[in-house]
Image 1 (cartoon, rainbow, N blue to C red):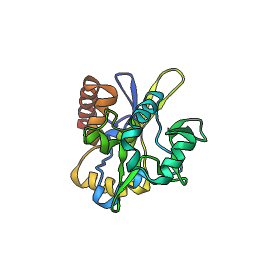
Image 2 (cartoon, one colour):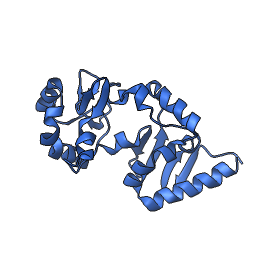
Image 3 (cartoon, rainbow, N blue to C red):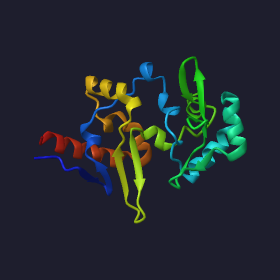
Length: 196
């Protein structure tokens, strides 16, 4: 039986490549390039903007002078050309929350969270990558696998280690949709992949 291109798991629509494709970040090779590549910031919600603003004093000294200037001018988030709320960016590239440790790009928000200094980790869109979430006007939520050339090493490593996208992202998927939903996703994946 062929796996359908769109799968409904608990009312959430998923592209089937979330089950069939492989992915595992290879930070030693990419150095966190996803925080500095692209022409728009990470999608955010109003609640996440509030969380970022609450954490701002804690992470301020980790941010570059350019990032601080952008935040002073337009805030931690802005509206992109598609009308979506996204994190503000510096020079058309870097997320304002990018900080550096040598050649490595880090998220200042996540760094502070992991060090117990703040209760906000980072936007769920960052944690879910390479999955992108889309909400339609009727309330339907869809999840798609986003392919990006800068993640070629993550795709290679995922294939080598046989880690499907949905398994690599188990923690953020649980954070976003809950443990019961994720268990249902695993059961659906096992059923569909077992029929290939």
